[in-house]
Length: 429
Length: 121
Image (tube, rainbow over all chains, first blue to last red; front, side, top):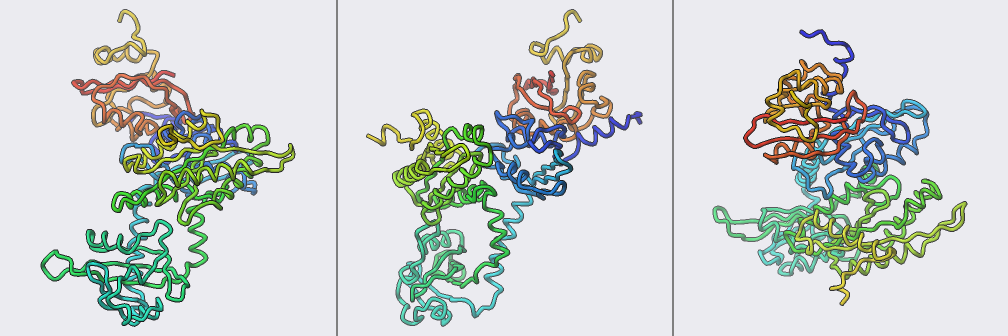
């Protein structure tokens, strides 16, 4: 045995620790950190300063700074396992972390202890469990709650049970022979799959389950789980029809709704967070691949925002970000997603929007932002934004390429003088 | 040794043929490891910067036990992906748990079993 000093032993321990440990001040300046912390922080920092926690994470967790600022007690745990989603548009190695959990503890007036841990595997498991839960919930709850239908391969109703009448208000005998899609008239304004699209997937995969708004005969709507299962006779693979099960799902519990907000909403602005944005982007990419649904992305960056923060201070900058989110969310179509991607950069995800529709909405957002005026102690403050749009078609179906293309156009709009939506010469002509 | 080898110019062959005392006398850190990332060479300069005893570093998997901060696509992954590397990259290490700006030189040659990372503060 070598006679190691206790300092050496301590260093060895910290070098090998498989969790990131950081000590910094309230401004984020890092005094001490172990190698595991740097393993995560440096790639996320990109060209920014990896010696400051908030600056290094500005792109992926801009909310951290305000979470710390909003914490009033002199000491205590500020957040526990706060999730940072880092998988967006970087084209990294497959086993690179996708989700980090960050715990912040305030130790004194200007001292924070921070841990960073890679919880990607845990999150993957949670998603699997959630899917299994939905599936079991549909199977195990009272069988009487189900509207069950048999439909032919071309979508016509062969039979429906009495519960179908109770749930939807349509007479189960009268609808026989009709096309189920016509009877249901689901809310198709957004990203939900239409019935024929669900049948297409079920024919290929065996089954498909989705949740969405469903209309009753008298016009009211309810939240409905719709399960489509392909049927075939005994041995042959040939499709003989589908079973469709509809379930009226009770309104979500308030606690679950709080949890959903917590997990999907950006702390500061009320816009969606990166995680929600990234999950929906993947979902829509699957729809694009399988069903050729159009998908557009707008990226929006406020012009000269740093000057606002420098001149008026962070609190005014924060109010401005909130206002921008408000006016843009008001313009969103159903199922559109407005998310904060980083500092003053926002993304708008638009299922079933083509390029021209996206440009139209981008210009409405630009005008709405330019029309805003914020009263501050230093007088009225106005701001403008630059925007770039791209479609998943143009990007050949790649999320990385979609984001890169929209970003490129955003920066072209900046170069052309800001307060504008980029339009390519070819398209304008 | 005639002239001390420089951070930029020293070759993989120079490092391989150097005596331990000469490698220890270099003004920059030298870490040599195999394809399995097990540390085979850890010079005295690097030991001074990291605060670790070379005896405890030799034989451990470098990117897991000592240099987790390089265990990402910027460094460790490159040794997996690129059989031939000779590149200098600016980096931030956590020597003695303090963020420290350094330059790393990554060296690998397809026919040589040992790869090297040189560390200049």
